[in-house]
Length: 238
Image (tube, rainbow, N blue to C red; front, side, top):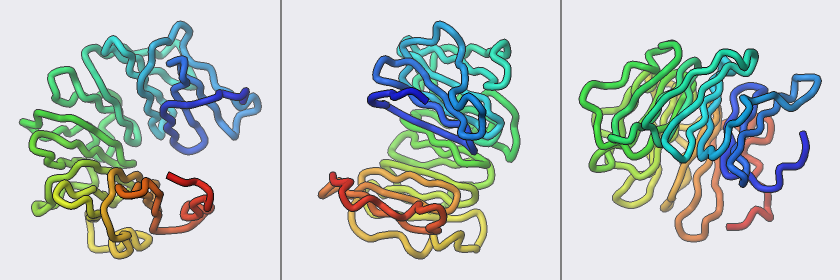
């Protein structure tokens, strides 16, 4: 893949990764492909966000609040979505925050990822898990659907992330981390080993999670350490 200078956002599933460049175009690449770089639809500009499904379907949101979704295997398979501001991807679905702060989804309803709860409004953020979605709505309330439903006692949150069967959120009141599972199993220690302190954001892979500390903007990670996921570079800095 040719150098991209600086990326604004990046997302991946499996071997396919896509990113928004500083020129607001999309670049995708696949470490299993012979050519590495994967083609995207022509004329795709003014992109602000991109999300990749496990089925290798990609959706990009543009600055005019429209979105384009395409099949990375077949660039003739294109779908357009209007009046959206943010996008997140699950296994075979993409869900968008609309301009009226509700959620709309496209794709296939594997694991219930498209079963948006009735009455969900005031949505400000959305994130995809492998088998579902989580959104932050009015009064910083977190709502998840699919295979990682929201616990009834989950406090208001400023950030949320999900993996396969686990969700984690930054509590609005004090910036602490809270994690939950759809079952009782402590997946790779994600439920029992959360770092303490105050955090501003959280992100998850299938077996591990990382969060940004509010005070010094450093990164703390926990969970399964396979493939070096917990090896935060010593010189990463704030």
